[in-house]
Image: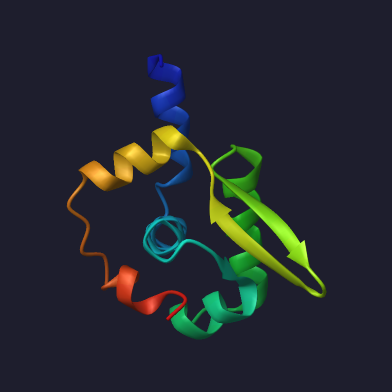
Amino acid sequence: MNAESYAEIFKALAHPVRLKIACGLLHKGKCNVNTMVEKLGVSQSLISQHLNILKNCGLIKGHREGNIIWYKLENELAVKLLNNIELNICDCKEKLCQ
């Protein structure tokens, strides 16, 4: 990987809500928008905006099951980076998708 690849990932994770989403998905595997709204205490439209940013840069993917879209962290480099950083961001791994 080159510096540009790392920079894109860091740019995508540079917002606290996106970092909490990515951290939560890393630890919980998958989650839907309604649960993210409930656990993170922000509006559905704000979660959707942040999910679009994460999707557009290739960090996450959504997969539909009926009326629910489940999101999952899909970028291996992002997974490695998040696993190697000691994160204690508002206990996001405990808050998201419990």
